[in-house]
Image (cartoon, rainbow, N blue to C red):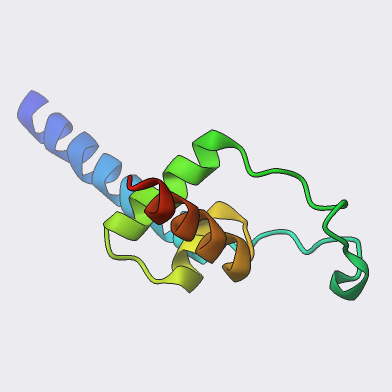
Length: 91
């Protein structure tokens, strides 16, 4: 009976992990309140180092730019910028 219980828990944990991964992949970033055409370079907040590390890590794992942008809540242009900055630094 204990072995069956442990197997059931393992299966449930596995299913929860799969659901969490699907949720993260399909989760769209919250749309900005500002109109994108009115955003100036002064309005854009700097990208945090942790977020930059996440972008580089996802890129090295082979994810597409769209997937990386969606998961990091950055625009595709910001994602490209982060990757290019890392390349220029030689990292």
